Image (tube, rainbow, N blue to C red):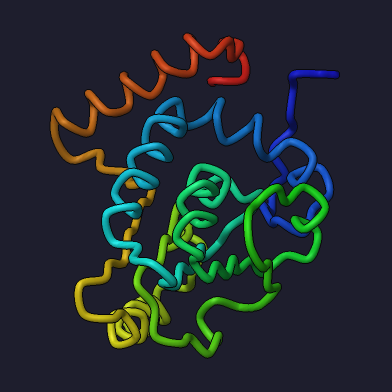
Length: 181
Protein backbone atom coordinates (compact mmCIF):
# COMPACT_ATOMS: atom_id res chain seq x y z
CA UNK A 1 0.00 0.00 0.00
CA UNK A 2 1.30 3.42 -0.90
CA UNK A 3 2.09 5.70 2.01
CA UNK A 4 1.47 8.81 -0.05
CA UNK A 5 -1.92 10.47 0.24
CA UNK A 6 -2.73 13.30 -2.12
CA UNK A 7 -4.82 15.70 -0.06
CA UNK A 8 -7.78 16.80 -2.17
CA UNK A 9 -8.11 20.52 -2.88
CA UNK A 10 -11.66 20.44 -1.47
CA UNK A 11 -11.37 18.21 1.60
CA UNK A 12 -14.51 16.22 2.33
CA UNK A 13 -15.22 12.99 4.15
CA UNK A 14 -17.41 12.06 1.18
CA UNK A 15 -14.27 11.70 -0.98
CA UNK A 16 -13.32 8.02 -1.26
CA UNK A 17 -9.58 8.80 -1.14
CA UNK A 18 -10.09 10.63 2.18
CA UNK A 19 -12.13 7.74 3.59
CA UNK A 20 -9.51 5.17 2.64
CA UNK A 21 -6.55 7.16 3.96
CA UNK A 22 -8.18 8.83 6.97
CA UNK A 23 -6.81 6.78 9.87
CA UNK A 24 -3.25 6.87 8.56
CA UNK A 25 -3.50 10.51 7.52
CA UNK A 26 -4.80 11.83 10.84
CA UNK A 27 -2.08 10.01 12.80
CA UNK A 28 0.57 11.25 10.38
CA UNK A 29 -0.57 14.88 10.39
CA UNK A 30 -1.39 15.09 14.10
CA UNK A 31 1.37 13.25 15.96
CA UNK A 32 -0.47 13.82 19.24
CA UNK A 33 -3.60 11.99 18.00
CA UNK A 34 -3.15 8.78 20.01
CA UNK A 35 -2.11 10.63 23.16
CA UNK A 36 -5.07 13.03 23.03
CA UNK A 37 -7.51 10.24 22.09
CA UNK A 38 -6.43 8.32 25.18
CA UNK A 39 -6.78 11.44 27.34
CA UNK A 40 -10.30 12.09 26.02
CA UNK A 41 -11.33 8.50 26.76
CA UNK A 42 -9.83 8.76 30.26
CA UNK A 43 -11.70 12.00 30.97
CA UNK A 44 -14.98 10.68 29.53
CA UNK A 45 -14.86 7.63 31.82
CA UNK A 46 -15.07 9.95 34.82
CA UNK A 47 -18.32 11.48 33.56
CA UNK A 48 -20.08 8.35 32.30
CA UNK A 49 -22.40 6.85 34.93
CA UNK A 50 -24.13 3.47 34.82
CA UNK A 51 -26.68 3.52 31.99
CA UNK A 52 -25.53 6.98 30.93
CA UNK A 53 -25.56 8.42 27.44
CA UNK A 54 -22.54 9.24 25.26
CA UNK A 55 -22.53 11.14 21.97
CA UNK A 56 -19.45 10.83 19.78
CA UNK A 57 -20.01 13.74 17.40
CA UNK A 58 -18.01 13.59 14.19
CA UNK A 59 -17.13 9.98 14.93
CA UNK A 60 -15.35 9.25 11.62
CA UNK A 61 -13.92 5.74 12.09
CA UNK A 62 -14.94 5.34 15.73
CA UNK A 63 -11.65 5.93 17.52
CA UNK A 64 -13.21 7.34 20.70
CA UNK A 65 -15.83 4.64 21.20
CA UNK A 66 -13.22 1.97 20.47
CA UNK A 67 -11.18 3.32 23.37
CA UNK A 68 -14.29 3.43 25.57
CA UNK A 69 -15.71 0.04 24.51
CA UNK A 70 -15.05 -1.72 27.83
CA UNK A 71 -16.61 1.12 29.84
CA UNK A 72 -19.56 1.34 27.45
CA UNK A 73 -20.20 -2.37 27.82
CA UNK A 74 -19.67 -2.65 31.60
CA UNK A 75 -21.75 0.43 32.43
CA UNK A 76 -24.38 -0.24 29.74
CA UNK A 77 -23.85 3.20 28.21
CA UNK A 78 -26.17 4.26 25.42
CA UNK A 79 -23.74 5.29 22.71
CA UNK A 80 -24.68 7.34 19.66
CA UNK A 81 -21.97 8.17 17.16
CA UNK A 82 -22.82 10.88 14.64
CA UNK A 83 -21.07 11.53 11.36
CA UNK A 84 -22.29 13.44 8.33
CA UNK A 85 -20.66 11.22 5.69
CA UNK A 86 -22.26 7.92 4.76
CA UNK A 87 -18.93 7.09 3.11
CA UNK A 88 -17.24 6.89 6.53
CA UNK A 89 -19.57 4.06 7.59
CA UNK A 90 -17.52 1.51 5.61
CA UNK A 91 -14.41 2.38 7.69
CA UNK A 92 -16.34 2.74 10.91
CA UNK A 93 -15.00 0.60 13.69
CA UNK A 94 -16.80 2.21 16.58
CA UNK A 95 -18.90 0.81 19.37
CA UNK A 96 -22.64 1.55 19.54
CA UNK A 97 -25.03 3.11 17.05
CA UNK A 98 -23.76 5.15 14.09
CA UNK A 99 -26.16 7.81 12.84
CA UNK A 100 -25.50 9.68 9.61
CA UNK A 101 -26.69 13.24 10.20
CA UNK A 102 -25.67 16.88 10.33
CA UNK A 103 -24.61 17.27 13.97
CA UNK A 104 -25.76 20.89 14.04
CA UNK A 105 -29.34 19.85 13.20
CA UNK A 106 -29.49 16.66 15.27
CA UNK A 107 -32.17 16.37 17.98
CA UNK A 108 -30.05 15.55 21.07
CA UNK A 109 -31.55 13.82 24.07
CA UNK A 110 -30.15 14.67 27.51
CA UNK A 111 -26.68 13.12 27.80
CA UNK A 112 -23.77 12.67 30.17
CA UNK A 113 -20.88 13.09 27.74
CA UNK A 114 -20.52 14.52 24.25
CA UNK A 115 -17.16 14.28 22.53
CA UNK A 116 -16.28 16.58 19.63
CA UNK A 117 -12.85 15.37 18.52
CA UNK A 118 -11.54 17.51 15.64
CA UNK A 119 -15.07 18.54 14.67
CA UNK A 120 -15.59 22.24 15.36
CA UNK A 121 -13.28 23.26 12.52
CA UNK A 122 -15.70 21.59 10.07
CA UNK A 123 -18.76 23.45 11.38
CA UNK A 124 -19.53 26.79 9.73
CA UNK A 125 -18.44 29.62 12.03
CA UNK A 126 -21.92 31.16 12.12
CA UNK A 127 -23.38 27.88 13.51
CA UNK A 128 -20.79 27.12 16.19
CA UNK A 129 -22.05 29.18 19.14
CA UNK A 130 -25.66 28.02 18.82
CA UNK A 131 -24.54 24.42 18.36
CA UNK A 132 -22.37 24.44 21.48
CA UNK A 133 -25.13 26.17 23.46
CA UNK A 134 -27.60 23.45 22.43
CA UNK A 135 -25.13 20.78 23.56
CA UNK A 136 -24.60 22.48 26.91
CA UNK A 137 -28.37 22.79 27.36
CA UNK A 138 -28.71 19.02 26.86
CA UNK A 139 -25.85 18.04 29.17
CA UNK A 140 -27.09 16.42 32.36
CA UNK A 141 -25.92 17.88 35.67
CA UNK A 142 -22.43 16.55 36.30
CA UNK A 143 -21.89 15.76 32.63
CA UNK A 144 -19.31 17.06 30.18
CA UNK A 145 -18.84 18.31 26.65
CA UNK A 146 -15.29 17.45 25.63
CA UNK A 147 -13.91 19.46 22.72
CA UNK A 148 -10.56 18.82 21.05
CA UNK A 149 -9.73 20.88 18.03
CA UNK A 150 -6.76 21.94 15.98
CA UNK A 151 -5.85 25.56 16.42
CA UNK A 152 -3.46 27.59 14.33
CA UNK A 153 -1.89 30.23 16.54
CA UNK A 154 0.93 31.97 14.76
CA UNK A 155 1.01 35.05 16.93
CA UNK A 156 3.79 34.29 19.38
CA UNK A 157 6.57 31.93 20.37
CA UNK A 158 4.09 29.31 21.63
CA UNK A 159 2.67 29.14 18.10
CA UNK A 160 6.17 28.67 16.70
CA UNK A 161 6.92 26.01 19.31
CA UNK A 162 3.70 24.10 18.54
CA UNK A 163 4.47 24.11 14.80
CA UNK A 164 7.95 22.74 15.55
CA UNK A 165 6.56 20.03 17.85
CA UNK A 166 4.07 19.03 15.16
CA UNK A 167 6.77 18.86 12.48
CA UNK A 168 9.03 16.81 14.79
CA UNK A 169 6.14 14.42 15.41
CA UNK A 170 5.48 14.06 11.69
CA UNK A 171 9.15 13.24 11.11
CA UNK A 172 9.05 10.70 13.96
CA UNK A 173 5.98 9.03 12.41
CA UNK A 174 7.88 8.47 9.17
CA UNK A 175 6.27 11.22 7.11
CA UNK A 176 8.56 12.21 4.27
CA UNK A 177 10.00 15.70 4.15
CA UNK A 178 8.19 16.25 0.83
CA UNK A 179 4.84 15.36 2.41
CA UNK A 180 5.52 17.59 5.41
CA UNK A 181 6.24 20.51 3.11
